[in-house]
Structure formats: C-alpha cells, structure tokens
Amino acid sequence: MSNSSSITHFFLLPFPGTRQLQLLHFCFFLVIYLAALLGNGLIITTIAWDHHLHTPMYFFLLNLALLDLGAISTTVPKSMANSLRDSRDISYAGCVAQVFLLLFFMPAEFSLLTTMSYDRYVAICRPLHYETLLGSRVCLHMAAAAWCCGFLYALLHTANTFSLPLCQGNALHQFFCEVPQILKLSCSTSYLRELGLLVASACLVFLCFLFIVVSYVQIFRAVLRIPSQQGRHKAFATCLPHLAVVSLFISTGSIAYLKPPSISSPSLDLLVSVLYSVVPPAVNPLIYSLRNQELKAALNQLITACFQKQ
Image 1 (cartoon, rainbow, N blue to C red):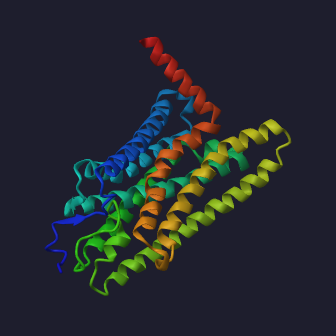
Image 2: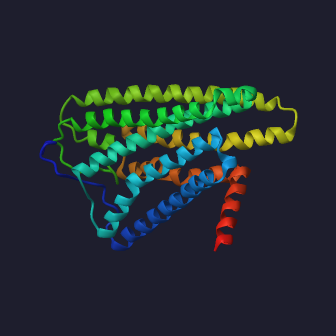
Image 3: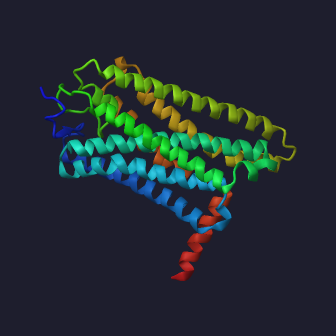
C-alpha cells in the first residue's frame, strides 16, 4: 500500500515476455511512428511552402497535423524505449507529463475538427460570405481558441487527477499513463469529483459532435443541389476526408471511454488504446492526401523542387 506522496514511479503494462515479441512490438510502433512523422511532416511542410494553400481549410489542416504529431509523440516513444530496454517503469513526473500532454492534444484536436466542420459549412453553404466569416484574423482566433481549450482542460484534469490519494499500488494496466487507469489506484471517494469532470467533458464532446452532425446535414443538402457533377465531386472531395477523420477520432475515443467495465481486459484495453491514441495520427495524413488533389499536386511540386535543387 502506498499513497500519492510516496509514489516516485509507475509500472506500465508489460508487453509479451519473450525478447523477440518485445522487439516485434518495438518495430511495429517504430513503423507507425515514422509513418506519422513522415505523413504529418509532409503536410506541414507542403502547406507552409505552397502559398496557394494558404487558405483557412489548409491552415486548420496544418494545425491538425501539429496536434497529431504531439499526440503520438506523447505515448509511443516511451513505450518503444521500454520495449527496447526490457523495462516497464515511468517516473511520477513523466506520468504527469504524459497525462497532461495527451489531455492537451486530444481535446484541442477535437475542438479543431469542430472548427473545420464550420469552415466546410461556410465554404459550401455560404460561399459568398466565406472571406468575411473566415478571414485570416478569425482563423487565427479560432485555432488559438482550440489550443487554449485543450490547455485549460488538460491543466484542470491533470491537477484534479493527481490530487487524488493513490493507495492501490502503482501498476497501470496500460502502455501509457491514462486517467481511467490512474483512477483505479485511488482509495478515496473524492474520485467521484474526477468522474463528474469526465461526465461534464462527455457532455461538451456531445455538443461538439451535434454541431458537426448539423453542419454536415446542411452541407450534404447544399451539395446535392449543385447542378454539375464536377461541382458535387469537388465539394465531396473536400468534405469526406474531414468526415472520415472525425468518424475515426470519435469512434475510437468512444470505444475507449464508454465501453462497459464488464468487458474490460488488459488485452482489450491495450487494443482500444492503440486505436484511439496511435492509429488516428498515423492514418489522418493518408486520409487527407488520398482525395485532396490540391494537396497532392503541391506535394509533387515540392518533391520535384527538392530533387531539382540537388
């Protein structure tokens, strides 16, 4: 038995015991991490390099790529290092940092995805007012608001979580420090305060989700009224990647936090955590690049320019 004041480190979920499987886990996470770095890095570089992409949609996409890089860099490198060293410990300060950063990047990303749905709504449903409603200053304020919301949420949530007395040991059944797993170590009824914060967070997420749904209902109604097939195709090409990213983010997060405790198991919790914290940052660049012709054309020009300089 221990309390939070005496805990100096936590033990994370151990991966398969054999050295070969640990190295396989390291290689698997390394491939995913490098794919996320490459994909999001190319999006950031391409948008910053091509002035034709200096529009609200691509400005928000650049911010999304930055958040994805931050989110996956919070959990995966530490897990890879532990597998490589055959270790499972993380310092108390490192655990606090992981919780804070993950709670910073993920809510900020969801806020940004909500903002991006508004951008698509204005672009398709109110195109004549697009420059007025989404000028450069407005876009900066909206992006800053998303980052600030993530920071304030993370600050409140992290402070509340680690103020709880922890006396159920220091072993976390997860490959990174996750709030639900830390709450299981609490021996005080004050954890209900944290659960209340989670419920309030779920309500805010639901309101954002409702806003996204209403926006896309209006978008699809407007797209179906476009007379030309080419116009409908272009509208769908800009909306479907965003909708796919939103669906992936919400579905994986919902499975992680809303699944019944009765079906919880270490292997299932591990799979779900990988789905919501590792997969989206690696897959998002692929989703956006597959259907976005402007982004692919700018990326080809960037690669060609790099080869010509050499």
